[in-house]
Length: 335
Image 1 (spheres, rainbow, N blue to C red):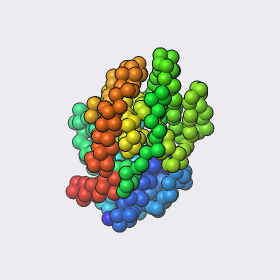
Image 2: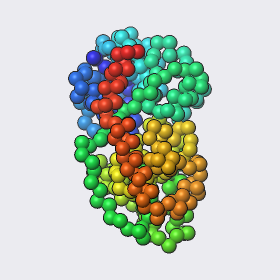
Image 3: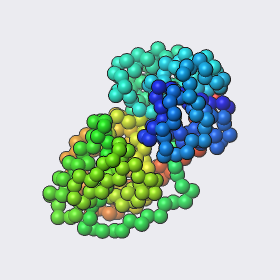
Image 4: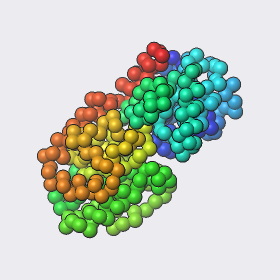
């Protein structure tokens, strides 16, 4: 099958959304498909090598003939809809891009476009919004990088240390990065135990801002994994996600660490974070999250059980990129 991902006027950069497209394209190539990415600018994604052809176009009319074209961001929706060289058209909604345009305008576009574009989304929360507005879509996850062998933890058990962690992104207020800082400062004040904050992000050079705080900007996979492995509680506070990747990656480390997420339709964890089963879900309130840590920190048996459940939720239910791209191909053939 010849598949083209449309990144025109959207581009590829060093961010989670672009990484999903690059790794999805690479996986489809590994499965034997002919895959290209069309764009209006050079590929600026340096985290992963791109196996697919990267074609720079000035006009969608110059798009190569293909079986499938897939829009990758709201800015690509129009060019996907008018493409005349594709047999089938898809648009993969992987984020609710209210930072690009209003929700009302997006819904109008999707409603009008569903006549000739198949909508797929990687988020149960997004699917629910679309369904509420009589817009049909299918769930399509990207999958994760799952090792053939279980990761062996190097975490040292230290009952006198509580390590909390999360993603730092101050560009988008919906990430609610301040929750991490508030929880850290609050726990540091009210408990005799030592509190450490481990964070990473991809928004340029950024330094730790507290004592007992370590922050890595643009960490390598190896360094990111070391961070995941040391954390007791991963704070997932974002409220505008499709499928939120970092908490799911953290769950691959069955080391007694658990995710604490907020109860919000677009937290991006609906597919894998189940309250008291694979982690904890709180109200969208940092104080409640902090109090939960104090309540649970010494119940090691419960934390280990949730951590193990989370690991199997990701590996068995969510699955690898190969597993999910095979599903995507089947979906594209059926629709």
